[in-house]
Image (cartoon, rainbow, N blue to C red; front, side, top):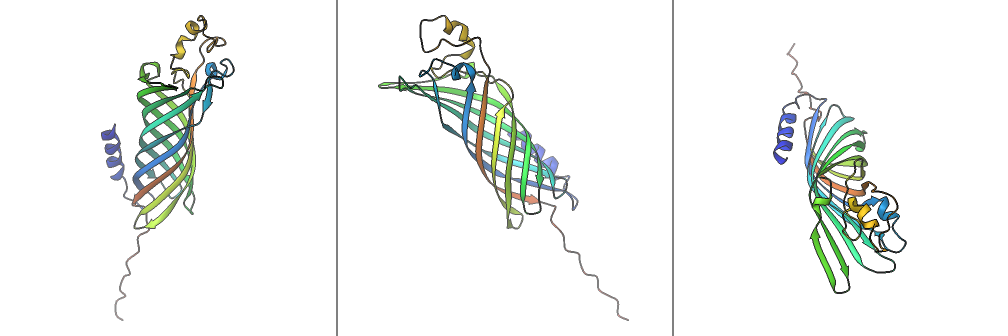
Length: 248
């Protein structure tokens, strides 16, 4: 995937040959509040499974083509960790699911003359691995649950931000981004059980479950702060050379 992104940037760079077009490349990182929502967990018996805040991070490369000073298309290539924490009100255990994935957002960008911008698009995510951890007293278990998650997902994404010009084509980018999965990412409950086994869990005598109805889809959500450093190739005004007047 890295090679594909670099190839795309190289091809894009060859098209930057006019005043009305520019290529913007750089590195960006995100720190976000991350969530995994599933109605089976949300409607679990009271006091058994409760969401608690968790945080994730993303970092990687960015490339954008601007067709004019206001309209462009941006693509990122991020390594990301998306987490969800859990606890119980009656049994104060601590649990956390961590999904490590590759995120590729593709967004349309609308930019003002001040550098402020709005972005909207989709994000393709490919899960690399998923881990689950459970702690209660002296019990501390940690194991992989990758097989219980969908291999990939598609997210909707929006953001607002500003590019602060530093000179010589460099800019500092800050933004707020919000995204959530459109497709089902599947996964586990707060005890690390495969959520697709809801029917089996309902038949047990364990009162932590007693899920209502059949399996419900799992969807991710996140809101984060982005920081990046970019360099613009082309698109800057070129000073016209003065022509000397012939002597009269």
